[in-house]
Structures are given as structure tokens and as C-alpha cells.
Length: 114
Image 1 (cartoon, rainbow, N blue to C red):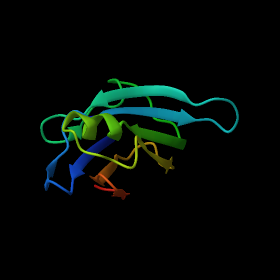
Image 2 (cartoon, helix red, strand yellow):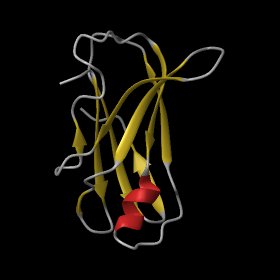
Image 3 (cartoon, one colour):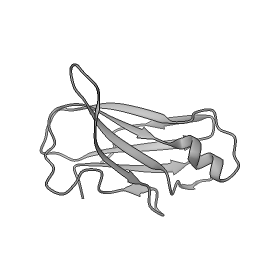
């Protein structure tokens, strides 16, 4: 398991959100963001390997981008947010960062999980 993971739950359906494309970017103090990982949520709505094995995690700002519009479109559901971006701060590089997303077609919430 990598040091940054995520889990997406579709609160409108009450089940994991499978098949959502997610990218992980490092946000430098200046200049463009750099994609350092990506994945697709599995049948349980999880991505356990956003960082490649052995890839070091540095302190700083990171962004997860969830392609939510495509997820809802597959089921023919209207959605307000075509994507969701969650920006978070990594301070300790020897800890696990789990960033869950609770999602429905017209809203979302997130928190630091365990």
C-alpha cells in the first residue's frame, strides 16, 4: 500500500464508487503541478497504490483530482460537478495519508481518514 490512498463512496446509492479515474499531483511553490500518480477506483471504491512502489513522499501540497462527471454519466445520472479536486498538505513523510471522498451527484465531502 502506498503512503497516499483514497476511497470513494457514492452516498446517493449507498455503495462504493467503482471506476472513477483519479490523478495525484504535487503542487510546487511556483510553477505547474506535476502528476506523480494515477489510478482507478476498484470494486470497493478504493485506490491503494497511487504512488509507485518505492516512490518517496516529500512534504508539501498535493492534489487529488477525481473524474466524477464520467462516473455519473456512465449511469445516465445528471451531476453538478464534472470533477472534484482535493488539495491537502503533507507534513510528515513517514505516515499514511488516506483521503476519502463521499460523493453524490450534487455534493461531496472529504476528510483525513486513517
